[in-house]
Image (cartoon, rainbow, N blue to C red):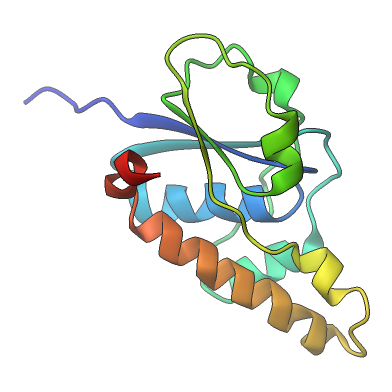
Length: 147
């Protein structure tokens, strides 16, 4: 039986430190049989340790993922480029080939957590956004035609 071609999706965010990293990890974990996920940022800010912790709460290890800027993935023939924040949507370059651009915005956990009094309070924001991204990823690839 021939192997089905996986859909190549780039999750693009501002710094590739949190939301896009979570989306890549969730897509690999939940949809690895049908999606080949990538993530990148307009710039690379490094992997957010709180994003790693929030994902670990769900049994998903993203600690070995690496923060990349979008120039590192420009040569990949993506089927879809999904921006996860308004800044990335505005800065999203043209990707060669047939890539369709889509936007699905999520709150920025680091911004929400900056006034948190405790680490646990900060992680509440990360966990909420992680769960929202998970809900979106669970609907992939079917939802792609509706965005």
